[in-house]
Amino acid sequence: MKLDSMYQDIILDHYKHPHGRGLRDGDAEVHHVNPTCGDEITLRVKLDGNVLTDVSYEGQGCSISQASASVLNDLLVGKELGEAQQIQEAFLELMQSKGQLEGDEEVLEDAIAFAGVSKYPARVKCALLSWMAWKDATAQALAGAPVKESA
Amino acid sequence: MIHTSRTLDVDAIRKDFPVLSRILPNGKPLIYLDNAATSQKPKQVLDALTAYYELHNANVHRGVHTLAEEATALYEGARDAVASFINAPSRDEVVFTKNASESLNLVANMLGWADEPYKVDADSEIVITEMEHHSNIVPWQLLAQRTGAKLKWFGLTDDGRLDLSHIDEIITEKTKVVSFVLVSNILGTVNPVEAIVRRAQDVGALVVIDASQAAPHMVLDVQALEADFVAFTGHKMLAPTGIGVLWGRQELLEDLPPFLGGGEMIETVSMQSSTYAPAPHKFEAGTPPIAQAVGLGAAIEYLNGVGMDAIAAHEHAITEYALQRLQEVPDLRIIGPTTAEDRGAAISFTLGDIHPHDVGQVLDEQGIAVRVGHHCARPVCLRYGIPATTRASFYLYSTEAEVDALIDGLHHVRAFFG
Ligand SMILES: Cc1ncc(COP(=O)(O)O)c(C=O)c1O
Image: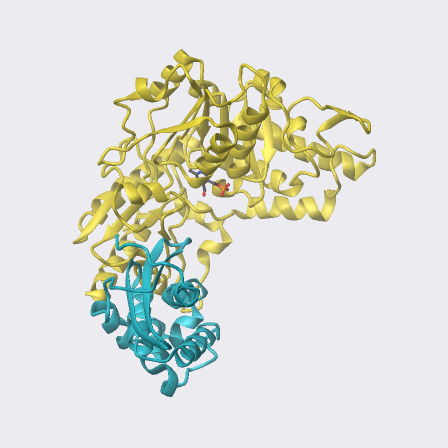
């Protein structure tokens, strides 16, 4: 019962069939790790003016961290930066809610499936890994940091 | 099917550990297979802690009143218990620390500040292994960075053992210190101490042994090991957190400089300079973890009562059984030795492509506590090309029935993510 609240079908679908995976051209690249479990992600953002035209990523990790990156790609690509930031903040709020919030489906779409994960403190970091990486990469892209060569 | 081993009455032992009869919030009984991370505590240890605080609590070595003397006697009594548990030639060779990490950092810092012949400097080499816990890597990296010394290490074979084939090139005349783990917390490997100690002694290097996963599980005899320093941590051997041990050979403890300064470690202090108390107090600045040391003394008494030989035999049998049953699970790959020979009771594995985090979560749902991640030994994961492992680790109270539950749990994990 409880397990199903964490591992929603939507999460398992994204995990098994991730959207937008693989590294593509970008304006900034970051590498984030979750030191407690070894999950890692390399993530690039591509901006066209104010519009986020791509978020590409590669990494290894659990179903939660992988599915979360896939959902992020779905949700944020094509959005204007301001809106993308609002979505990121809404997701952060949901994940920090300790199971108290359900999430606004209008804003978060598939990402509301992660509401159940917010009850498991050890897994919240997994869900947030790609979102924190995205935030960092976007800040760097805006600051004009040079993109690293692809590995 | 529950077999009690030849010599251990596991059912009776389990009754001493209140938490082992815990029912988890999801209604499942606890199956605790995370003993390499920390052990559970018997009520004998909990009672010793309570009695200490209810009856004897005082600071040590600094009062004439009754409680101060009782507390001091209890604290120093714990030192005696440790000394005899590890067959130390002298009780003054037992330094209390807060954990194994502090013990290892203490040695690294003693050597960093030492005079010749111990001094580690830019011409020196430090040798460790690729299977060390981060606690036995990072202090040496820091020492190497600060002194300019070169850090070298033994690599690993595919079956999870130390590759000693180039021992003479790795341990050389320049080697000042060789520090290695006796039993790996991630691979379970028991390392061949003698071969390493021989070579280290030939070149005059000091030997430091991380016995964190050995002291709880087997007879530990520091004289037989022929090491110079041995570190371990109380909380993995039935004692509370916050207490660790560094054993060191007396002459070294006398010659090497203190690291932390403060109360307790001094002889006289003036505004210009100070002289130091003799070892072990020289290395125990400030109020020590008194109750925790008393708890460690009680834990040792408990372990001695059961018998370290009997504990080792029981764990060997459980490990053999678990290795065999785990290998029946499809797609399961053991990271480390696949037989119980020269092996401790921690077994790491991967399960197909299913991430250990997910394995651990589904097992938790069934009440089974395992550790997932890189187990503070990330270089081992890199060596075997895996992001992380799931680790089950056993102790004196572990049963075959718990192994069976783990196996059922793993089948369930496969079904869930299949
Ligand atoms: C082999 C080994 N060395 C060192 C340590 C560090 O112990 P502590 O965290 O108590 O300092 C551990 C435990 O995590 C260990 O398993």
